[in-house]
Image (cartoon, rainbow, N blue to C red):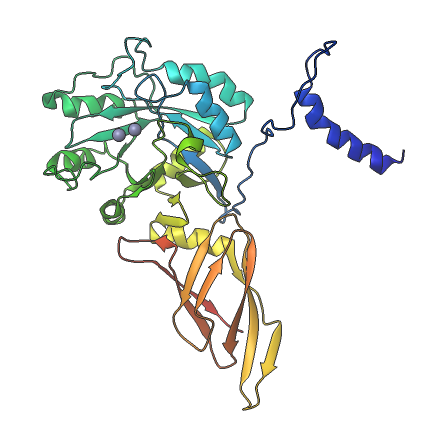
Length: 382
Ligand SMILES: [Zn+2]
Ligand SMILES: [Zn+2]
């Protein structure tokens, strides 16, 4: 056997050996053909300047509140789906499994600490402070200890309940504003929220929660300098809610532009507001962040061909490259060019433009930088 074949055979044998770590039993055969292959997704997003783009989901539940799964399932899902960081944020005030599962607000985190480290995942400690609507729910992450958080939902304790985590220097974001339509004040910038904001006890808003894009929340984030968050708010299995059998399907998450792949560095980036929410094919965030992300992923290459038409017009051919696993849709606005361009993950599209076109101006319709505005980009030609 030559060296190359030996290497190849060794490579092929590794998965079999991993699965086959069980003693051979006479008269027993294992039928592994239909077993789900075990691997971690590798979501490719190029660095944005000096920052790494980390995939984070800081809102999910387990049986320690109203979720359907034991915490380790969240760790498995996060690993398989290629997340860098996650937080279990079980409700403090709502624990419907309490007859069967002892209420313990720190337990989800404690059970996952070691397994997350083994899986090279960053686990951040969190909780969902679950007040009646309005004001509704707030996620607190980077908390220290939730054991004495306030379980009563009496409105008189709303502020004290949020301040428990603020006192622990938590990063606090307002969850799914407007999630209960028809209740007065449920989708407004109410005095309670403004008071938290003025007291530096509100740092972000969930602009996308699962399948819901809370469009007004994006404008609040932009206007008030709050951090844009996207989360799954998963209660069931991710595979139960998302059609992972389809290409490009991923849970809703926050892309965090962090200096390093550490919990501290993610916190610095959250405080600085360097995030983009990623859900379905959409990227949602503050303009500077969405622009920085787009620019690092999408490149226009130099002219590779010029076609001379019979009337003497010259048409230049370009390639527009998407070097990422993100999806972009562009609407070209000016000039004699291709109009609508779909850039699938890790793909290239051909663009043509007449020789006298000086730049390509496009709206990236798969992005939102305000509730009513997409990112506008311009590629100079030549
Ligand atoms: Zn909630
Ligand atoms: Zn929740």
